Every structure is written in C-alpha cells, then in structure tokens.
Length: 360
Image (cartoon, rainbow, N blue to C red; front, side):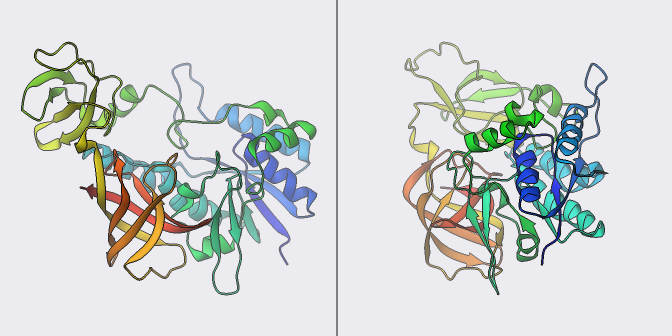
C-alpha cells in the first residue's frame, strides 16, 4: 500500500496540481524542491529563487511539508557536461531527456526514498500502466502537452516507483484546478529554455563554456555566401538568423542550413525549404534504451518521432546490434538532426529511444 509520496515541486502549475491531486486522494504528501543550477543573474538574484518562493507558497496552501535538495553537482556532471560535449562536436543535444534519466528519476528518486517515500511524483504529462512483470509508459492524454518523449530513457524500477497524477488531464483543466484551489501558480507561465538553466541569450551563455569561432557559410559548390557566428548555434533546417544577403547568381529564395563541417568550422547552406539534402529516409541511432528491458526483434514496424513536437511517423527498425539501430521511415523526414533523440512508439506506448548519430 502506497502511503507516502514525495512530489517534485518546481514552482510551476503542473507539479502544484500533482501535489494537490495526491493529497485529495489520501496520500501522505510532501514536496521536494530541486536546486539544479547554482548561478546568479546579472541583478544578483539566483534563477531558482522565484520558483522556490512559489513552491513554498503552494506547499503552505496545501498544508504539506517542503524539503529542498541541491543537485547542482549531479546536474553539472551527468547532464550539462554532456550537453557541452555535444555542442562542441557540432551536434544538437536534448538535455531534458538526460536530466530526467540522471537527475529527476535517479538522484531525486534516491533522495526521496531515503526520506521514507513509497513513491515519487512529478507534473509530467504522461501515464504509467502498471503490470505484474512490466510497467508501460503511455502518452499523456493532452496531445499538445504529452511529455513521454522526454521520459523515453526511464527504466522499470523508475516507472514502478513513480506517479504522474496529471497525465490524464488537459492543460486547461490543470490550470482550472489550480485556480479553484487558490494556488498562486494557476496562471504562471510555462517554463521554457534549457532544462533548469532557463531562458537566456543562448549565444552569450554557451560561449562562456566552450570556444566559439566565426567561420564561413558556404554553398555545396564551395561559394562563400556569409559568415556564421559559431556552428554550435545553428541546427539542420534552420532558416532564421543566417544573415545571408543577396548572392550573385542565386535564386530569390530563402537559405537553409543543410550541414556542418566541424573540422573546417564551415556551415553548409542551400536554397529551398524542400531541398533534397534536408530529407532523410534512414537514420542510425546509438545508445538505445528500451523501457521494457527487452529490445524488439527486427524488422520491427512501429512509429517514431525525431523531435518533440513532431507527429509520430511510420518506420521500421531494420537492424539492431547492441545499443545501435538502423531505422527506415515510410516517408522521408525533414531535418533529422544528429544529437537529438529518436523515440519509438507502438500506439500509446512509448517503447524507448536513442541518440541520432547520422541519417541519409
């Protein structure tokens, strides 16, 4: 019988309502605020101070204790360091997925269990279908907020010890419940930006940690058409911010990033939103993780997405060797980006995922 649940209270509306619902369901609920980024802003304030203030008010309103823990070292060593390595190599990482794996459902989970918790809970828009032998991770009911993509690296132990109380709700209903309960977070803006680091000028922020060098922007024919501000700041398919003016002999069409040459610090561009080199029918993924602990048997038809907001796409896992897979899509996919995650689904069930290494 689950009695004590510790909720990861972030100071946002989603985790606030998760705590509210669990208390209404009769659990012994406590909040736990994670400080995962220890840095002051230009005005001297810490980026987490406003959030912890909101978390305190929410827990006071709900009449539940609030614990705090500093996990900034875990975040730096296990998430942010990898984030920097990927950017330094010209790739585009997704730190939110690694943060869930290493911090929220590992360091946070372990600390909560030490505090006597039977389960932890978060405000993720996802659902868990428990089973005697296997737990399944399901999509959240709100298709616009479903966060199963970011949870694709959870394992059976983590799922078995976790609750997602708002996974069956739509976002407007979450806000309505918060307002009805008088929670200060009911109309708080959703957080964006890098996980736990928040919104900030990305170029200035990244340049503090890795060397950033200007370099040429070239066409496939080798013509230099501009200068980039550091290839780390560009991603495949990007149109905005290239700064390419009128190019002699070129069509009057927008330019798009189609590749990076890290060794020569060169950004490759071409014209046309549907340029053939922006599309891939096949990719290779590394560091694969399967939530069920059992990899599928190729050839395995399923659906997948190569970025968070993408609709699920029909594909076949054609080969699987260790933690590496070759995936072929039914339709060519635009701007498949190395460093991002491919996440696999079978209907509502999230199967797992891996890091995109290359595509063709």
